[in-house]
Image (cartoon, rainbow, N blue to C red; front, side, top):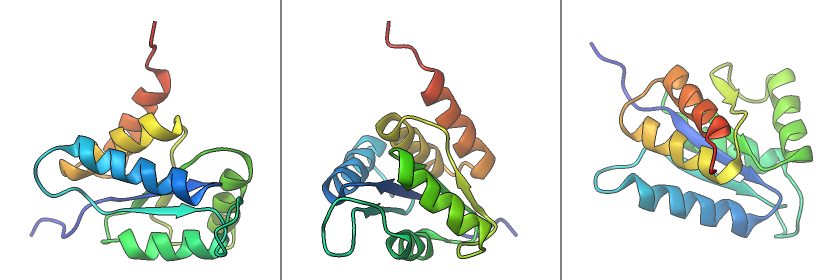
Length: 135
């Protein structure tokens, strides 16, 4: 029997608006069909700038369909927050951080996950986004 569900994608930004807009852009660029689950974990619970472990945990739970979750972070404390959650076991073992630019990585991750790619394929796609040259 084939695996149920798809890889989920979580976007962790210091800004609620940046995370939500990036998720919207990625969904739009998937095109027609049914995009894989994506959740934004941006800013602090009160709407301020920062990163929130609770929002990240909630987002991971929202998108986890049992096939893994790939997390993209914008910078600094967003990465540290996710690494701390991985280290203390607050998020499942199937959660992985992508080393990719935030917007390009989010789009490639969601497109690949939506096409049914496994977690390794999603990470490989984000690696390609990291190395893509614009000139």
